Length: 420
Ligand code: DGY
Image (cartoon, rainbow, N blue to C red):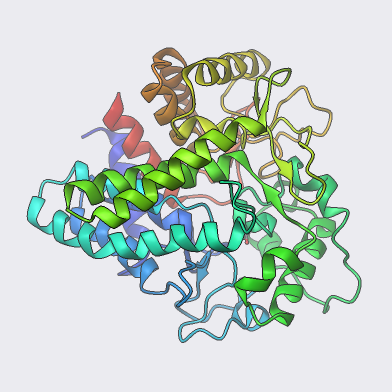
């Protein structure tokens, strides 16, 4: 085993809280949804059983309506805002009231396919299948009420790309008047220059208070939200998860789950075409309220490579990533460096993230774009060698940003090393 792999495993163990893993100490002291699913991919390299537990713990806190919340507050910790009292979701174990990218179906497929313990993997996958299927069903029922085949996010935190430039215009429509006074905790753990701004936080909190006032009733939240965006990356992750879940369900003899999820994937992939921007060479977000595409060249549109998009689209995305590689030293920046709104160190407005890199590289490799996938893998491992296991990195200098000893970064490293 290489020294890098050993360091990655040490971080995963250090952040392990028994049945779930914190993204990093201090900044994120609970269980986060997509962090956990991607973390399991790292854990499988040294403890397969523990990897299954990570996802099972998350799904133990699924809502009765099928939603899987973005945070599970397993413990009390005043070091994080907004905590359980702000969300007031009324769940037996406190959770947030919104969701996150649906990467679980993909993660389960990968754990199941690569398993050494076949009997255990079959049993644990079989138990998770209906839960993940219920989450997928929840998405299309609640976030695609008109049946267009693509789902909307109703809060920037749902995307996982909290402060992306993609949301700037739409957030102007979200008021900030009347929100309760609050004090942020994130800026005590990480450099404020690497984090979302106060102005952005005010909008985030207004949305939380609005949804809370509606009792977190998911049948109402979509139409009640002034923020409703169809994000190509978010949808690509969901559509990939639908296809992967269907494949596992097929092998394990769950035909209803197969049919339902293949139908979601087929319809969604066809609808993804409506988000393609030929001049941009990538997919773009659509504002569901105005129906217009948002002119913002973020990594959200590149993450679309994770789903089974048409080969010419994958080739065009590889070309766009190639152009970004000429504009910065490390790929993949979370936003086009040529855009004047790009900020090299501020969270999702420019920095490179290994989770995004992993999903883009995986998708491009499947589409036959091996050279770009290999370039992304190389760049990711160079960042680790230069700057350690950070939350994200300045794509020009490679400087580590945000939190340190970061769980999902370590998990992705184990996956990258496995593939090289
Ligand atoms: C945070 O607190 O920054 C998270 O990204 C929100 O889930």
